[in-house]
Image 1 (cartoon, rainbow, N blue to C red):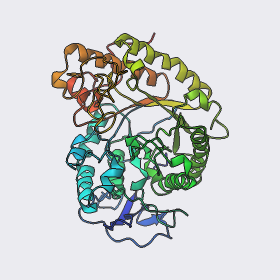
Image 2: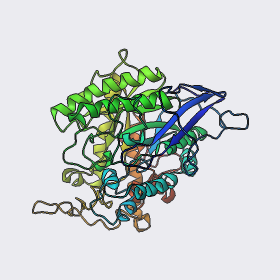
Image 3: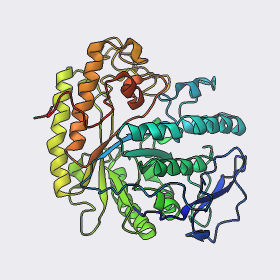
Image 4: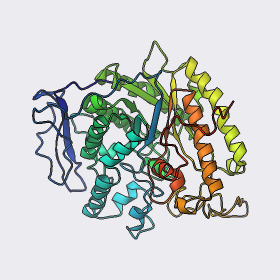
Length: 472
């Protein structure tokens, strides 16, 4: 990581044009002892931040940063122990169902339709309130107090304020609603203040990289890899991030869950994008910032000898572990879930030791897909056979007291949640670390690290074990 020395802080200015055809233009540069550094001289002049936007500058009276440099972290040696801040800058219907319900329009199923099917000012007002309240500084304090050293922040491309000076392509984000950038900058300052490191993850790309609502657009025909302009813009986006805020970000994750399984074309484009994205970040931010790629649903073995040292350095593989999105997985008993999770220890540790650092960057305590709208707004669960019900539907059981408020969870279920938490932590501790999905959710406590801490199935000390050496 490029540490910001004393006397360095983020100086940000912005203007927000409330118009369908104009993107919010918010400029950010580093300020070193009163002098600008790394500013984009080709950017249009920016006015002061609007009074109802956050001001990420919190300098001391001397003008220097109000908090000290973070404790050194040795990637590859120290374990990443983190949590995702899901649903903050990329909406997901199951994380914040109230936002979608309040539209009174069942066709609003993702952030794309949230912008397309509402008045711009109405949508912006809802999002600004959400950005201000969903995650606050208190959350960073609680995350640090829980012994976690990283947050992974999912971000949509539409929230990165590219200008014509930053790309040869389009800068339009319509119908997405821009404006989250200042809130991201504020989050980076909170993270630095509370000694929490940041993995900044491009979670949504132009055209959708997988067709899931968590990419911003729920679609059966994702277009990201099928249009070179989409891919180029994504490269420009990670370049902009590295150039403008690389000193406040520890790891740039080039793209979340690209759908390499969709076609050979998608897989080929993903492979080239990893190379181009890596080069873009390295050229702008040097060698100190780490770079993360994913397995694109192809398995880590598909990336053997890819971006390895010495041709590349400081690269992580992000592996995601869920066992709930098929009837085959849901058919497993609880002990079979545990045993299957343990198989990842050998696979991932072998890959990490001979290729690149590896983390388990998304996983949860959920053993069912019962959380409301987890499979999409208006879509039911496989567990209780309400997911596109038909003659081949398999009923695994009732969803009652497997999701929602933990007040309805049995002691036996909470004990199972603890054991399932530990086995997946065991995977991460055998490689370079882990990042839980997610910190909070409105109505799915089995997915919430925050609620797990509160209810006791997640320990306050993440190194504490009730089931030590669970995979031995």
